[in-house]
Length: 131
Image (cartoon, rainbow, N blue to C red; front, top):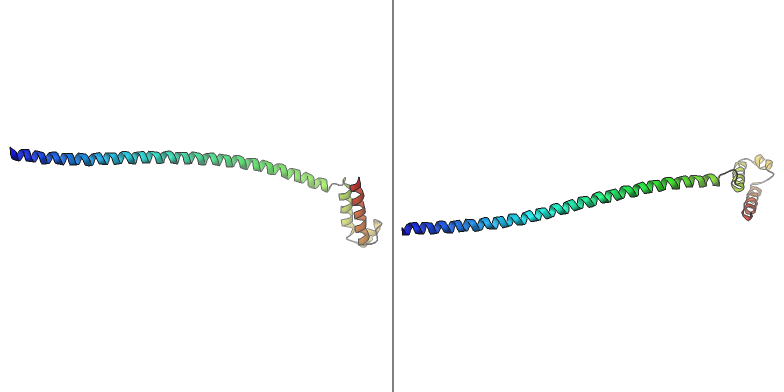
């Protein structure tokens, strides 16, 4: 009987040891599950933030493209206005630029030298600015 009691005590100690190991493992697993859950939440938040930022970038890109188109059209209009034949300065400058290519074309305009052409251009520009 004493021997069985002694064996029972050893078995009881072994069971308690296994139980304490199991309890420690369960606690470790619970902690690791909490860490994994927290990491999954953090990953989901980062993914959502990335999607939000991508949408903001797409919206900003669309706005920038629209602005580019608008400004390109405005710039083209300004260039056309600057080179418009109705603008006397631009018209005269264009004529003088073409006329400088040959001396006899300058004479047709009533200007005898390229220096005279430059002076005539300055006079026309100055008089049109005064208007």
